[in-house]
Image (cartoon, rainbow, N blue to C red):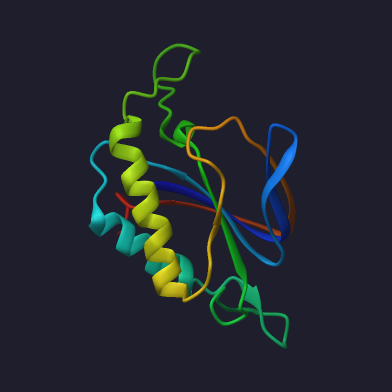
Length: 150
């Protein structure tokens, strides 16, 4: 699984011109699911995301997690994170899982985040054409790949 997370002051998803989901201070997470992803990838990423210290403490040092600040999370599926650009100018998406595999893993990832954070997780709609708005805080943007843990 590949994730791009952004620390945000606010973020929202619009579908067909209407706000579908929105959050205030917290994390906007884009997730791309690979054919070989598993429950182990989900658990590792969820633990990292809930405990990663990227929010400022009282001394303005990034020393608090989204869990510690009671931040919100918005998860958006994005198969293009699995793009390969090794050949030519057109990205290849052969590593991206098809919807029959990706959707259950996406739903399991969201459920794992809810369990680990003990909070409601907002989402986009898997496979929909979405418009994402955000106010990046910092800016803080981090890329993670569950296949590169060391």
